[in-house]
Amino acid sequence: MKTNQMNQTAVHVFLILLSAACLFPFLLLFMASITDEQSIVKDGYTLFPSRLSLDAYSYLWNQASTMARSYGITVLITIVGTFVGLLISSLLAYPLSRKDMPLRGILAFLVFFTLLFNGGLVPTYLVYTELFHMKNTLMALIVPGLLTNGFFVLLIRSFFSTSIPAAIIESAYIDGASEFKIFYRIVLPLSLPILATIGLMLTISYWNDWFNGLIYITEPKLFSIQNLLNRMLSNIQFLQQNSLGGNSSQAAAAIPMNSVRMAMAVIGILPIICIYPFFQKYFVKGLTIGAVKG
Amino acid sequence: MRQSGWSDAFKKLKRYRALFLMVLPGLIYLAVNNYLPMLGVVIAFKNIDYSHRGLFGLIYYSDWIGFKNFEYLFKTNDAMVITRNTLLYNGGFIIVNTLVAIGLAIVLNEVRNRLASRFYQSLVLLPYLISMVIVGYLVLSLLNVENGFVNKHILPMFGVDPISWYSESKYWPYILTIVNLWKNIGYFCIIYLASIIGIDHEFYEAATIDGASKWQQIRSITVPLIAPTITVMTLLGIGRIFYSDFGLFYQVPLNSGPLQSTTDVIDTYVYRGLMTLGDIGMSSAAGLYQALVGFILVLISNYVVARRDRDQALF
Image 1 (cartoon, chains in turn yellow, cyan):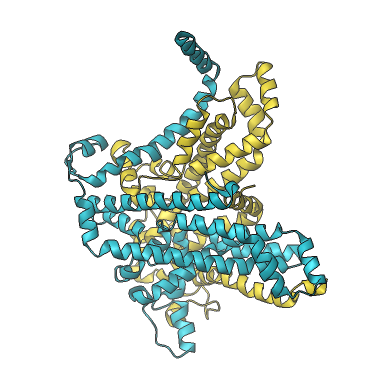
Image 2 (image 1 turned 90 degrees about the vertical axis):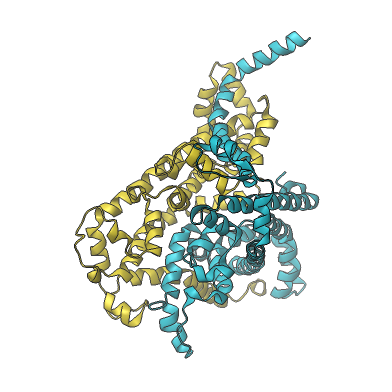
């Protein structure tokens, strides 16, 4: 058996180096956020700064109201978007999975065609701004592009049609259960794995979304955490100019700008990294069902 | 006959009205989010005049100008540059990502300790989980001109002067390829790993008994047996070669003007035309050009996949 395996030590050394390469930028970002401003100017960003300081975080603490607001918006759109998205995707997927559903073929094609062709950014932008007037509303962070897509619907449909025996549904119907009751009493409880997987995908895409905010939101009060980060990336003074509270009289020179940006990014990724180990299994599952069928 | 046909249809509608109600919200969403914009592609043939209000007013009252927007687009050098960049980047990404991911998946499959293997997978997959804005910050901490890790610590080791990364376009094809690889390698790797794990162990046992070396086994067993997955992933990539990861090309170069010759792709061009230049005509023409060529490429690549393996095809 020994010849069948590569040298384990070499394999581990290689993979440890590679994992370190994946992790390195995150560590650098974190160290940069706790480095003293003077030592950044002198040595640049480094893993082993000569002087540590929590100035960046205490500055952000003074801006807590801006930060908390953006965080609140991100949490709100993530919860609402994931819930509504799961609901309408599974509601659409269920009738498509029923072999006796009239017009099933046409409806499935309407869902599927959205994967092949799309109108592009300009018409989409005009639909949401000129027809639905979503510019600078919270709806713009939830509705455009993210709520559901044909791909999710088709994945849920194929789970329904392979894992839920038609006989169960039929007998429930004969026993007098309404279609809605069958859906939420029988179909949904039997489909928790796929719902968890799609729900996780939706959660991640809402948490990470900055694109809708970039094109539909110009009002800083409605920025999600990603939009705040996006704005700070191009304009380092953004937080200070738009602070809702805190000590805005603080002199610009005294603000540890080089580390504040990095500290904000750390606060932006922290929650997702903290819960990553717990949902990794579903995450991997979601990625593989998408690409390799079965 | 006709009468009973209608009444049958009516009965069916009544019997299935709950199911029709269920599909309604989803269909309305797709109509708004996907089908209305599809109809909106006529904007590319119009001279949009903002003095009219509302979506229908804008489209209905603006003048038809035929293919003028497309003429302008293809007369400039822009169309050539963004098409070239889009194709070269995405083509390069397909090749680099596939090769590295397969190599990594083969090595990961060799790890005997299950816990260690899962640990490596988690770390490699971590970059796939974060938003492109964060990636922009991570790259900035490396490439920042005054404080960046590369300019302060790596280049001095080789005695090279600091480089102002965000204004020199020639480095960006490499930078973006590396960043894209770093971000997506975990995803491609677990796809190929899933495929490798599915290979029957008896092949390897028989090969070992026959005295085949590890390298020979990889070449003659592993790679041929995951070839269907490689083909499908590659063809799916080719089907989407006209669409770029907007975040990668917008956030990572910090939307820097001097870099545009090597970082501008169709998606960033459309975005800039709409949001910063206000040139809706050119922008929507480029968008429709992308959608049409993209559509044709998806159809062709699906046709090729379907001919090889019916089950793997999208349709």
